[in-house]
Length: 292
Image 1 (cartoon, rainbow, N blue to C red):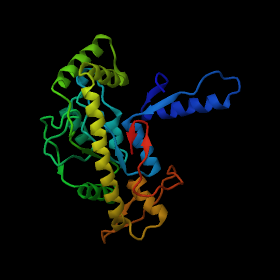
Image 2 (image 1 turned 90 degrees about the vertical axis):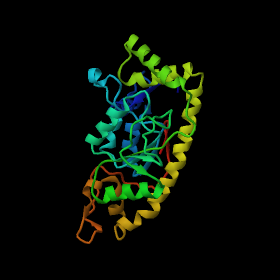
Image 3 (image 1 turned 180 degrees about the horizontal axis):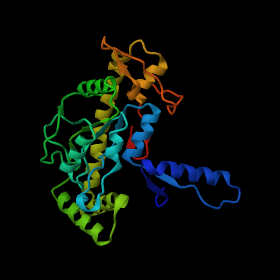
C-alpha cells in the first residue's frame, strides 16, 4: 500500500469512489484505482452510516499552530459536530494548538471529556497543562452521556480523551518544534503536514514516539471496548418499545428522535440516506489505521 494510498478525508471520499467507478467501468481506461487511507473525519462518517457508536483512534486533529495565518483546521472537528459517534483518543495530537482546538470544539457544541483526569491529555503526553472541560471516571458514565445526547436529539458526537499510559520522552516537544520548522521551510501545508511531522518526530526520537503511539492505541482500544459494551447494555433503557427501524434511527439520525412528555422517546424515523443493513451492538470494526 505504501506510495499508493492517499489521505482521504470526508470531502475526498465521493471523488475517490467516483474515480474507482469510472476506472472499473471504462474498457479503454488505463488508469489504476486509487487507494484511500481514511482520516478520523471520514472514518466517523463511515461509522455513522454503518450505525456504529464507538470509534477508537490514536489522536484527533484540530487547530494547527499558526492557524491565525494559515486557517488550517482539521475536518475532524466539524465531523465531530455532525456525527453521533463516541470518539476515544489520547487527546488532540500534540503537534497542534490544544487550547484553540478545545475552544473550537466548544463553539461547535461537541462534548469533550477526559478519562480519570482533570487535565486534557496531549497524545504523546498524559498532560498538556490545559484543563479539561469535563472529567469522567467510568465507561458507564461515558455511555450514559452519549445516550442522553441521543435522547436530546443532538447531532454531535463526543470526544473522550484517554491519557497515554506510556508517554514518550522529553525530546518529543523539541522534535515537534523542529519538524514544524522543517515543514514551513519546505512549504509543506494542509493535509501533508501531519504525516510529515509525525515521521520526522519518530526519526528524531529514535522510535520512542512510535512506541508510545502503539501503546496509546492499545490503551484506547481497551477503553473503547468497555464503552461500546456499556452503550449496548444501557441503550435498551432509551429505546425500549421502538421498532427495529426506530432503534436504528436513534443512533444514525438523532435529529429525528423526539422526546415526549413521559421522558421516553417516540417519533423516530429513518432518513432516506440511512443504510439498509444492521450491525449488532457492540460492534468493533477495523477501518484503515483506526479501530471502530
